[in-house]
Image (cartoon, rainbow, N blue to C red; front, side, top):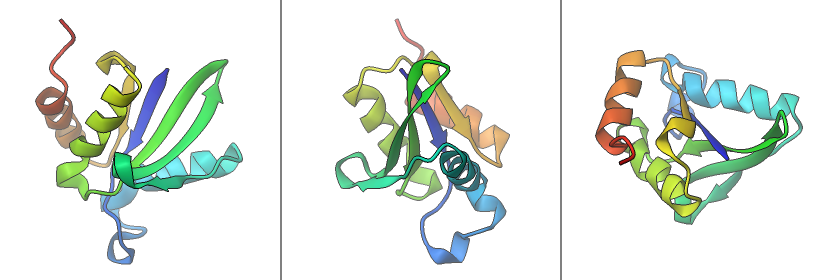
Length: 109
């Protein structure tokens, strides 16, 4: 199982801005593959499921604002037992991605 996370901020004031690069990429990918996101309040994000090259994947758009997106990611990661190396982050901020991964996902023991 893979987890693909598109980072961004909820709300119309961030729509189509550089802050929402991750959301925009996931939305286009989901549309191309005929899958729809559904809000999952328990996971604090919009979630879609897809099969990529025969492997199941979760697409996640955290609805917690970018600074707190790790909360949503960790809920999904722990809820379906995904190892950290199976998580991909899509963002316009490469430095932020590194900080997010190292802060919220200490490497598996």
